[in-house]
Length: 112
Image (cartoon, rainbow, N blue to C red; front, side, top):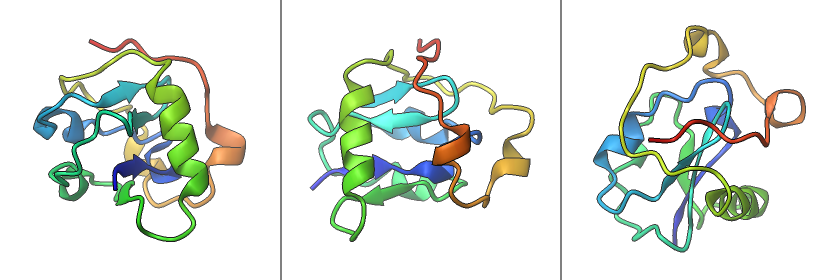
């Protein structure tokens, strides 16, 4: 089992999760974070820290797409271990459904 970041993170990117991760397995894209599944130790401390409820265990059904996306970009984007300010409009995007199709960016973020 591993944890994955889902589309609820897109355009929110609160980053509360990165500070509690004991193995630094978060990677930063332009407008979301992902977890590298091969580095995640399944501790679950990140899940309750996410204000957008974007982090879920991969044992929940229907997350295959997100597991693949986290794996792909967890190996391409820069590592992030320190919380920064969320985007100014993060609260406006919180709770918006189906953001992947129109809002996801494959571009990397700045990382640490």
